[in-house]
Length: 207
Ligand SMILES: [Fe+2]
Ligand SMILES: [Fe+2]
Ligand SMILES: [Fe+2]
Image 1 (cartoon, rainbow, N blue to C red):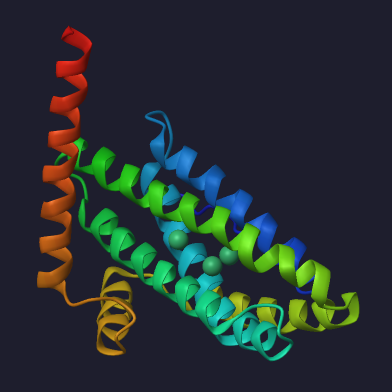
Image 2: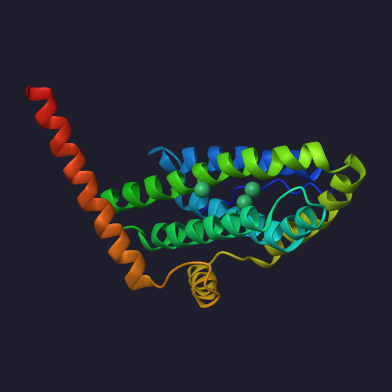
């Protein structure tokens, strides 16, 4: 497996640096989707940068934005919940190793869905208010703090299957995410609702 170099800037406006990573997520998701690339390298880079990015946001960015009143407790909690959903989808993707190409595609699609949803919502409800309410000086100070932590995690390696599984357990333990049986039940209900919706659509087409 060849390594994909993840950029490691050390300073700048935290909001711009976060947006750059969100673009990087999209690039790596696309790379992981292609069938003519080193998918293992793409998967590894994607996992590492997702975990480092989100962990450093929770530790260094969200709390300060809350203190500065740029975001509310609800927005912070929702962001953390979506990070946990990303961790959950990432774990499934990491576990879909090698054997079944359909499983690879399905778990990648689910991961892309939760990552894209979160990037979009974070940009609308966290980044935009912070741009209005937080001075550039503070954003640059936060840029150094966030990047230092992010790069340190990348350096250490933070997204092996075991590390991601431990992070998911932690999120469930802290009540950020519901326990597995409840999530499975919710997924089943969603799946059934989807089937029902399809039936209704098909029936309407025939009319
Ligand atoms: Fe982010
Ligand atoms: Fe985030
Ligand atoms: Fe959301």
